[in-house]
Amino acid sequence: MAFHGRRADFLMQCIASLGLGTDATVLDVGRSPLTNLVLARFPRLTTLGLPLDDTLLDKADQLDSTRVPHIVFDLNAASTASAWVVPAQFDLILFNEVVEHLRIAPTWVFRYLHALMRPGAFLVLQTPNAVSLGHRVQMLVGKNPYVEFALDAETGSHHFREYTRSELLGHAERAGLTLFEHRFVNYFPARSALLRAVSTLTTAVPSFRNGQTFVFQRPG
Image (cartoon, rainbow, N blue to C red; front, side, top):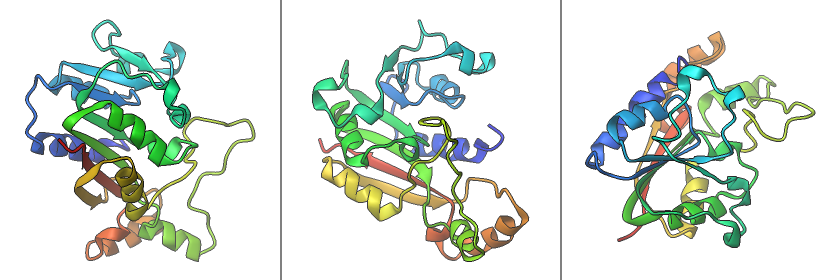
């Protein structure tokens, strides 16, 4: 939460601007400590993702599974429509800091999420900006901005692929979603003196910022 605090604040402001009532049905893809913030606003909350493993979760971050139902589905399997789990349709889907961890073309994932959205529903996606100024500077000085995979890592915290705005917009549109809003935001704190120095240069060029938030809508 220390690293993601500013992103969480921006997310909650973005959700509030959509004007949904507290009775809205919400799906949070990828249960995390931020799920608690969403639950405080939307009691009709469901989560979706891999099977929950209590040994991997901080006890303070766990949610009561009887209060917050969890849909078990691996998004890496979304290319097989017959495998989709679609128990209901939702007014709002939160898809934050997940797409960069997936080993599948986002179009498939967006098509699955489209099936989980009511007509007129919103999908909020947050993900790093693949071409942020920080990434560009690191490459210029000969450093790879991405974390190297461990030899035994297939999943986990690694980013398999980060995306540009135009790439994700194309994937979403192919799945039948329309863009409602997009913002570049510096909500990730700089991890080094070099990145802190260049972050001030992103004020004039939004596309150089390190994070981005999309709001997509399923046409009514």
